[in-house]
Image (cartoon, rainbow, N blue to C red; front, side, top):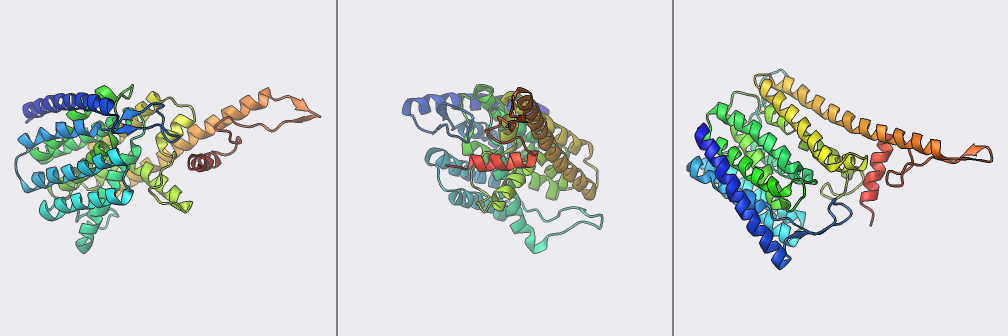
Length: 384
């Protein structure tokens, strides 16, 4: 299996590179499929966003190795639908409801034809395994839609979604190998190879973006692989993929809750994601990618080391991950705000015996508490 996996990684990366070169030529010649700059984005010039074609090309190589089982066939058929809907969005910017419908149709194929359903949540509270019963199908849909959107939302800097995905897919490939599931080993390895080919063009200069077609495809692969492996084929707890996906889950939940608290749709676009916050407080884009990839690597290594832990132990670990990420963001913002406040206080001159009010240059905001800073960053990013 190892020789096949290495050969597959090489083939998928070559296919990805060839496909992306063709896409770049086509997009630039016809001026189509370009991601235009706006206030929510960090690039200042139009960039092709059809990198998902390269990722799909690399994944196609896995069909030869994976065989024709029901799970594999349903996954590949659904992956094509996910990709197609994302591609339409990359070209036409369709409403999120149509993208949601595409995800539901694709998931239906894997659930009702492939039989990939999450029915057991494991021993989350130390009282025995929790069986979902009639709720297993709707909960499976909820999980797949959640992971697809999480990967889509985290795709905001050159190399970020691609780097995070390589690490998380590597962890899933390890668990697939332990389970003896060759099909999902090949799926994970093919995606790693195709992402490696994509990153050649995407990081660090950002010659092309993966777009919704790429991020949705990777999110779908992560979700379906996790459900297939941990619900039926592995003795490990189903909480393990949740630990692996800690960072995108944290970012998605935090952002969506923040939007709904303001009375907006959870899918309303803004600039409040974790990578936006880090860059706003002065962390450079490359360092932001490195730090977030390092955090994800730590979460994945913890999942591998604790693969025999109980579900309730992994739940505690996941909650700790969420708390640590929150503290990490708050610490960076607080440090930046204090630094700007000190700098401004030293610069101001007294007038009539009083100091002028010190202001922060973080987007024109007053130097106040970190939570207030984050709240106003969200409000600023949604103003017209």
